[in-house]
Amino acid sequence: MNGEQELKGNFQSESHKLVINIRLTSNAIGAVHTKYIAQFDLSMAQFNILRILRGAKEPLTINTVKDRMIEKSPNTTRLIDKLLEKTWVRKFQCKEDRRQTYLHITEKGLDLLGEIDKSEDFPSIKDLGITTEECILMNEMLEKVKEGYK
Image 1: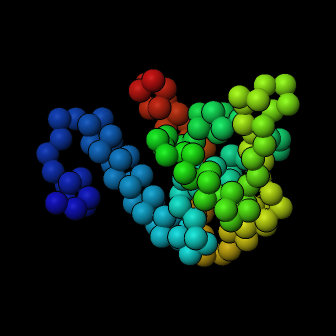
Image 2 (image 1 turned 180 degrees about the vertical axis):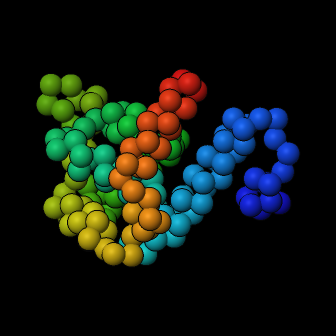
């Protein structure tokens, strides 16, 4: 049964339908973004790590990066190793505590994100005709849902 058929089915309540709809929508967005990002030889998890590092504007510990990831991944170390190989990030040890390892996005990594950001082909909610006000309302509603599941 595909997502459209699933949403036409019988539901215990509108709130039950909403949960299913959120999950189906998330999967649909994820599939489109995954396909798009793959052309840059990136996985969504790697893209997420690069965006976390760019947003931080300073080196972060690997544990901090793991905590901030959208989708938690048991193989974050392997993801980071691939980013290191491509020289999109660099890794170094803390001088005060050698057990702490820091990550920093490189200029090459920033350039890659800039290229993705500038692309008119990157799938965006804006392309769906959803207004800024609707985005604000949806974000507020999704925050309430997210808080309810904590």
